Image (tube, rainbow, N blue to C red):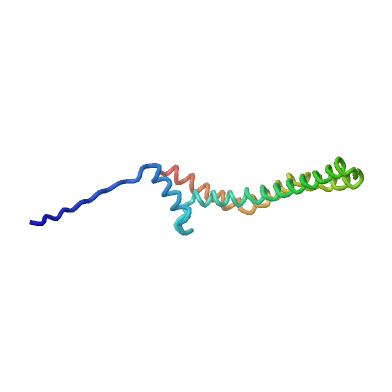
Length: 130
């Protein structure tokens, strides 16, 4: 007689694997699925914080490179007058990096302030009720 057997095996993912899968799922999930309030407030915070940092870094790096070119002109190529002029030009963006950062941060803070405060109030009131 031919006996048929049914076999079933189940292996649950470990906690580490589950966190990794959830992380990947969030990364590739459609925007509609990822719109919980906490992630929305984090995204708004990134919109406020990132552009000022990028602008300040660009200004600082460019200014530092131009300043370094001026120093090279003075020390290596013995072009004192031109090197001083180029180094002075390089100091301008370096000096402007922080004021531009503060200005851009204030501008974006004003733009997103109402949304962030509204979301944070909703989150805080949800946590109190729970």
